Length: 410
Image 1 (cartoon, rainbow, N blue to C red):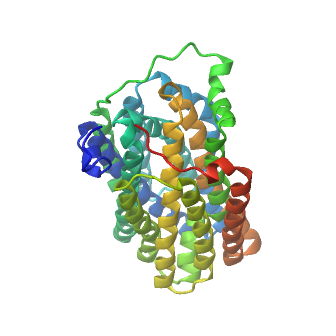
Image 2: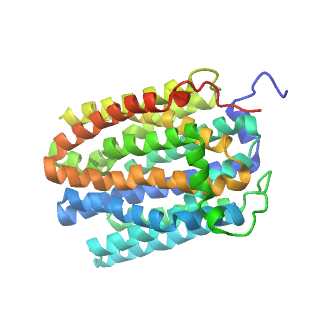
Image 3: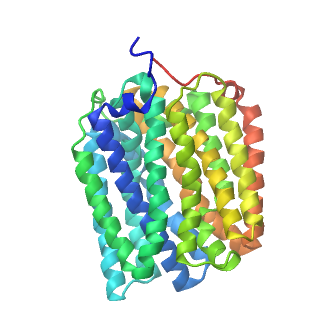
């Protein structure tokens, strides 16, 4: 039965040395991503003053994920996942280094930024399924929800520090956050290559048409998984305002790069606090309802953020938004990993990554387009209301998900 005094705490998870390396690698990788995201957003908006261009960043990141979806799942199931992870981080480091050099020499233009973002998106297409599939192999099955919550806290910890650092370093020089991001990506790759999983994936059968599409078929046949990831897809697709933060900072809140970093930091503060809380508990009751509540609060705070004209009020609203969002993230991710056989986790995670990418990157494109059509504030309000409506609809369409109680196994 194990130690009844602390069966779910972080200490039990971090006692696995490879998980600790994985966690630290994710901190470095995400810290790099967040710093680069601030630099890219501010630099691109300074060059174009276009919300449509900001939305295009999301589309350019999303397209590689769509084109490579069926490939990356098989790669994650057939090859060493830690090697995939480390190799993708090396590719990202090289790409970010090119951004740093081009910026330093004064030769970077919007087209160059979009090309670099596409390369980073391609690397992330492979990195995502490998990352999600690797977690259950690093800890005992009963600790998977807590390991995922702590992995989310790694992401959020970096997301707290990264935007502020990116904004501050950008003031020194636009090339500085890119340089720092490249170094952090290299550090993440070293840590990833040193991981030693407790369990290796089972050998997979020969590649066939059916095996290529098996991840899609598995999700289609498991309604709770389908409902959870499609809920995230549509709610964040409509409600995501992250891509528009540079425009809100510049046009609505009248602040500079440091203020943009603060706005990007705020959701991570709420998410980190919530993920640490989730890492100390097991979902004994009403996990499904908690996930739906998180999405509804996410939509309402999106509306509140759109209507705010004060920096500190906007920051406070974004903190609440981040906390609500991470509840649905941890529950969905735990559900997908615990209800999927290890030999198929790569393919299922690839489809899940497509849904996540659709909601995030394509959501950024949607936000940019609707802001260009309707205006910055109206478009964000419409998206927040849409997220609430989607959550209410999904509660009726997926009653089994709404009634979901426990996540822990073992």
